[in-house]
Image (cartoon, rainbow, N blue to C red):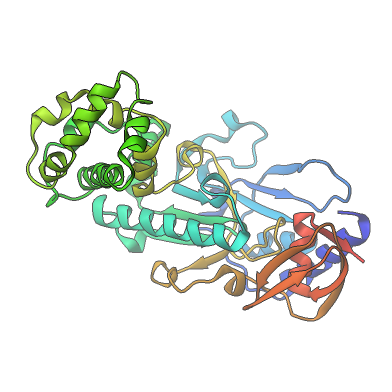
Length: 375
């Protein structure tokens, strides 16, 4: 952002912080805080961290005076959160946090990315509640203000977990390190990954039957150790295998050379279907026991949207391009770098390259993203 654009966006942030009802996390005095400031012309973000506050008024006054572009706090609890080194802080535990970021899941138009990451968040919440038995009352859900959602688990049972334990949990969520022999040893009447694994394999076998035989043979022979003869024989048994997967486990299934090649591939059609059953959380965030995370009710410096806390039950109807937008629809003139379509505030704007008038909320978004400058 050039100086004029920086001044415009910062002024909008100032107006918001002067009026907004801010909230802060529990045990505020045990958290480390970090801030990124508006810095026109800077090529990279610089974090001001190792800061602590004794109470909510002190924190909120600091934010309103500083007017940062990003506000973060630690998922960890420390004895001395403002100590200059991590070792001196003395770690006392950390909230369990899942981060779902559309940028790590799918590429595409912004609204489409937001739609897909909502689906992944819904899958994660279902796993936490239905399969892992986590009480929904212990879960805080937050739209990140950018491209995804943060899921905070406040249950004290997880607070003392280290990175290794959190790794096992996020591996389950993401479907990493699955053992086919265990997952197939059951039936579709079970729940969790045994069902997801079987359904993914059934979908894969049905897909093989939906394409031309030559195409199916060509695909199967790309698998390690599978030749044309094995592929032809496998296709003849395809319907029988689907029937087996819909019933009780047959141990001979895992002895089939082609089945073994399919379920152990790291990419391809089966893996794609299996990944669709997972909740694609960002693994490093969950395993990091000293992570800084965005403060709910703050503004995201890369979009100008609110880091919006919401009830789990409200996720389905939540539209971030309406519900997390805090700025007005008054006209602002911007100089846009390239033509684009921008949905926001319940409307879709066709914006041309060059100088255009757009609603203030859209202007803040485009300027924060580096797509436009104030004209």
